[in-house]
Length: 80
Image (cartoon, rainbow, N blue to C red; front, side):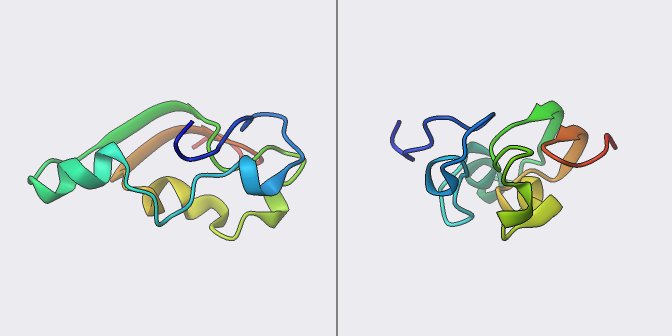
């Protein structure tokens, strides 16, 4: 609730459906301690298929938010 992301899966409200790249995330904090991170599965923190084209981070969002490795599905992108 602190980030004001209230509905990330099917929201048409762009401002409240994406995590800011300036947000402090757990993988960013762990990276400062020397950890590497990976995310596996679905990633619904960058908007939905409805507004995926409006996401300024595009498909780099997972990495911009701090994860080093991603294997899964991101809104609007084919699985990788």
